[in-house]
Image (cartoon, rainbow, N blue to C red; front, side):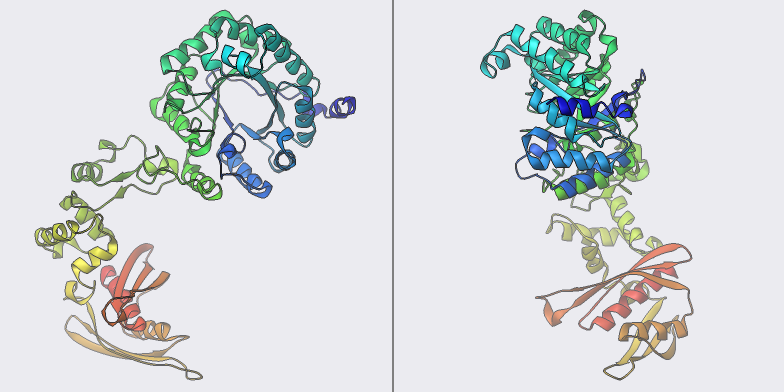
Length: 519
């Protein structure tokens, strides 16, 4: 298609672009939208891909592999639209080593501010014989032709030597040398089937650096699959032997057992100080991981490193005590560094007094007024009956959170509410404060607001309700309702909990519970 070639050359700004190189910089090539989307059931619409591409740009990804344009009209259009949507990352389009694929990729990338064509062919004898029914020389010729043809459209051309993990090293070196001579700016050495052990993969990368002439003219990239659970280990091994581009996905999704996990590589480099760094803002990991999981309908396993639900959760009493004393006793990563506000101390029968005290204080209880040994004994009895103890369970353990545990605080002794249509809601409340009773009445937009206004007539505290949630406890005696309330006073946040068969009464109990914690 000569017209495509002629038309493409008009984009001189794009054609002259090449990925800058920095000795200790690791460039992140994210293929979530291409290799990751190949997982059955994880297909995305173009609109969804654009949204994730913008998140990847904000995350600091250097290259986004946007799709395989020749494969379908949808993939072609996704590459076009992602090219328009992002400005900082290189937008990459995948092809096979044939001119039709490359023409389609060039056309799909026409709006990219920074574009790359990613072409390649099998390098192992298994692929050469059983996939292409060809010979090494014929495959080598196709590889060189594909790179030269792609360079007619764009200066940034990446070549992948598929199944390099099982390829003969001497032939692989010949192929890498030939495609660099043909104009490849990046050469991808994929362990396509996740076959290699880390020392084998490291040795393969080292072999190339030792035996390929002018290898410094291209960037060596690592693309590892997780069939044996070694994708991240192999990737790090490759980086330590000189590779400077990592091909990876969010949450490690991808064909079969998945790809190298972006978040794992970034945090390994950050934690181990190997002299290598990325441009990734790791504080976005948790949110981006959750979005990819939700949009691709691919749950993150709870024990997944970095972003799994249990990655910063502690249930063992020994671990909980250690973390509460000094986080680094059991955490090598600060959860805030990956976008998680704090560690989770999960209450179970294995939890100790320190963990129980931590949660009671978080709920607003004043530990100095509580017999912690007596409460801990009752806690263990409850924990033996349940796998995990929730905040609701703790409130049940402690009573309803008001009168029983704040004998010197505020208690409600009378509540009367009148409301209806067109009657303006009115509330009268009587509070006992330090043995003395005070009563007040007020109106409001609703019965709960009227009651809170009446409370403020007695206690003029500057309290702002941030969250208010009502939960019906169906199936329980008297049809109880539970109210959770979050309030702010002088910049500090407090939580109130209340229960009653009447929603207004439950709301008052929750608000008074919060006031007692403030006092």
